[in-house]
Length: 225
Image (cartoon, rainbow, N blue to C red; front, top):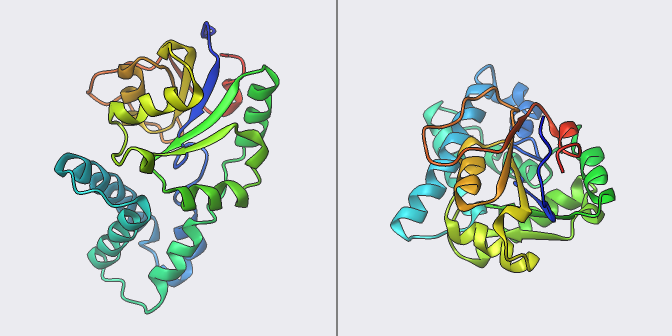
């Protein structure tokens, strides 16, 4: 795989890229029942849809609110009404598991002298909790939330915000890493050198933006930068 040229910073999506968004449902699969996996997938789908719809309508709410609304929808769709279950699931979302390849990849990228950052739809409190729970605090120069700009990815305003905070003026100097097709492609269309992590076996979406590289997991990233 061809090495990316001129990279000064690696900017990572959080949910689905660094953190396993389906871990809460797996942990509570006994309480939730045999449909736990389907509910988790619908929850994630609605979480993303609601973020985009709020961006389009200009009615912003932070990602914690959006995540709760999406969970309400998914549980109701499958007729799950157990008292206290939503609160338990949401609590677990603050302590998501990092994927096994995350720490070694971040350490290797930092050892190459690259800046590292998270750029996420998550609210600052959500990201702070997830990063601390996974023990990743020392591996990032900064953790950036869309709350600073009040609109969700893949708005160009969000990617531009990362450049401003990193004090980088040339978009191709940023390697943007995401397991979400729409995010990797949105970042590529903006001008970042985008790397998509193929965690979910998905094809590229039929939208503008072509990632510079497709990797099977983050262990391949240090060799690219």
